[in-house]
Length: 65
View 1: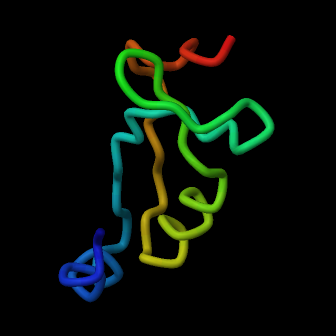
View 2: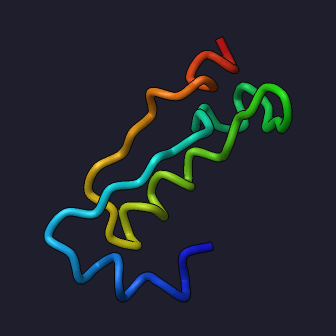
């Protein structure tokens, strides 16, 4: 998803991302609207792209309990 802008993200001293969905993984079952759950590997991918700061305080932070 960030492939085309990864070089730009990695070039900053601090890169911030708003991670809207929980990353609880397949143990809780992947889900979509209205209660989201994404793969935990997404977090690793975001770090690899170059993000340093992650906001997880969203209206979806309790979607999987």
